[in-house]
Image (cartoon, rainbow, N blue to C red; front, side, top):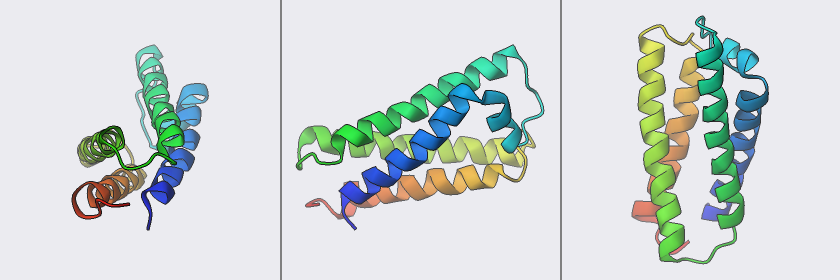
Amino acid sequence: MKLKHWFILQIFMSTINGLSAMFMPETWMGMYGMAEINAGTVATTQALGAALFNYAIVAFFARDAQPSTGRKAIVIGFCLSHILGGVFVALATINGVMAPMGWMGVFFYLLMGTGYAYFWLLKTDN
């Protein structure tokens, strides 16, 4: 697999989740079984959506980038961000903040984090 394909997967997943969280925060939180829906959680979910959509924007512009220090920095940042996101979503799911659908979020965060770890640590000439 090429890093370009991983960036394209990132664009797809982050666009869908980012736009959903920004423009339909109550629906998005409901999908994950978050019971505490108030002005604060809506605003936080919209901010998360903006951050997720930012992943899509960065991946879009990085998808055709040649190997460089900048591209490696993007890969490292995405890797660490996804792994940390997976850990925190797992903790929220374990503690009952999210319904079992939270495990789907954990899966996607860790899948993407693992993919970026592969491109960062093992496949350096992609």
